Every structure is written in C-alpha cells, then in structure tokens.
Image 1: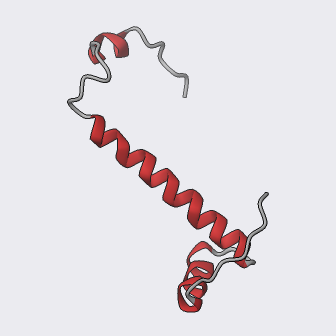
Image 2: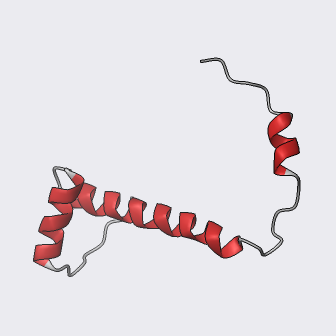
Length: 70
C-alpha cells in the first residue's frame, strides 16, 4: 500500500462511497480506481480490433475446446 495525501472533490468522494458501498474513503477510492483500470483495459480490446494482433480460426479453436460439465 502507498500512503498519500490527495485533494478530492468532497461531493464526488461522497458519491463514490455511496456508489461503491464501501465503509471508508480509502476502500471507496481503491474500488473506483480498480473499476476505472478494468474498464480502460477492456476498452483497449476494441482498439486492437482489425489490427492483426491476433490471427487464427476462432471456429477451429472453439471446436477443439473440451465441453464443460454443468
């Protein structure tokens, strides 16, 4: 953990605590940061679309995948 001092918008901090359901400011801010990073990483997938970063046959890959037991 890194300890730091931040100047934050009080109303936004209150909303963040309410939206996350966390009990402390630190927990709420950490949760909000994790969610932000997760969404940014997910958005990166769309930037790679059509870039040639992956090549293969998705149907073939799916056919060779063993079926899951439910």
